[in-house]
Amino acid sequence: MADVAITGGRLTLACSTCEYSRRHLSSGPHLPFASIKPAARIGCNRRRTTNPVSTSSGTRGRRRMAMIAAAATETLQKGIAELYDESSGIWEDIWGDHMHHGFYEPGSDVSISDHRSAQIRMIEESLRFASLSDDSVQKPKNIVDVGCGIGGSSRYLARKYGAKCQGITLSPVQAKRAQELAAAQGLADKACELFQFQVSFQVADALNQPFSDGQFDLVWSMESGEHMPDKEKFVGELARVVAPGGTIIIVTWCHRDLSPGESLRQEEKDLLKKICDAYYLPAWCSTADYVKLLQSLSLEDIKSADWSEYVAPFWPAVIRSALTWKGITSLLRSGWKTIRGAFAMPLMIEGYKTGLIKFAIITCRKPAS
Ligand SMILES: C[S@@+](CC[C@H](N)C(=O)[O-])C[C@H]1O[C@@H](n2cnc3c(N)ncnc32)[C@H](O)[C@@H]1O
Image (cartoon, rainbow, N blue to C red; front, side, top):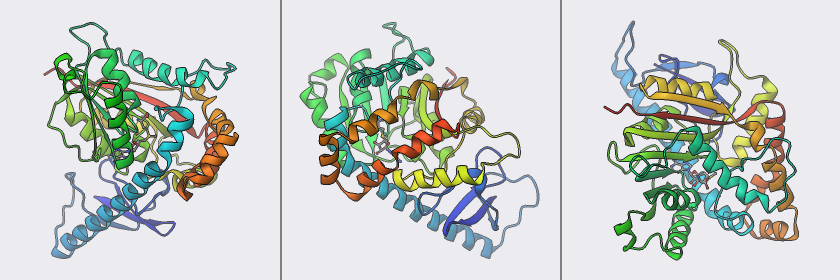
């Protein structure tokens, strides 16, 4: 069963039958899970335990809601693709090929040149947290980078493990650039197939991945989960494509965990709404919501941590780089979506400072058989 709500003039679906697997779809960025008020009820794909009523008007209603939800997802994903098509070149120019936070010592003073190594450290700390093995037999050999940007993680992981890596993104510009960089670094070469570290990229949807079940021994999602309008489907796809015994690593933006019955305060919802509008994000969820979704799929060794204190220097550094001559001129040459994103950067700092936004890592393994 799903609740239907109009929030801020936008339609939202939220499954109310299954406590942890509520679906949230809207025609664009909108408010977090907890803000959704039931206004009508329609069916969802989970089995109800009581009072199942099926009518032809109910079926028509469901079909109509599904069509509206699909259109809403399409609109959101078009916005995401355009944002990254427009902004990826500028980011690469100033920051390089990793489009994610760095991992810093808390309270450390960092110079601009430290940021790239902090981004590499983020990858290494994530692998360490998930207890990934460097052992030649156990190390990953087949990796998927879900929401790959211009492929920074894909190339790094492929090189580190001597593995094959496939990246997917919604942005055609990113996929093309990622492939060019891989080719320039000799990683896309056919000959590399012999050594098992061929890297490739394509435009594809993380919610409907073009891969077979159990194909990858490492499923990597670095700062893409926040863009997913249906967290249940997202996590379900990660769990589907991971091989038995394989590892899933999700590093993502979350809102703070909520106590039972608690919802975010109005000022918190307002702040998230502004961030959603700027970065093409749908409803946020908490780290605990992710953990519950993974538990519902019977995944093992589920671990999570709040790394907010380790990423604190990141956004101030991005703002400083945007305020340089190069940053300002690049922004002026970019499009409106990139400029709006730049204006929203202080909101991320405010979110972290107030404890509303959490930088989360969640990892788990699929049972070996
Ligand atoms: C902040 S960037 C992170 C890029 C990369 N993981 C990195 O760390 O450099 C977010 C990425 O998520 C991708 N993304 C968002 N929604 C997606 C979806 N539904 N399917 C595939 N990729 C998606 C975007 O296209 C973009 O490449």
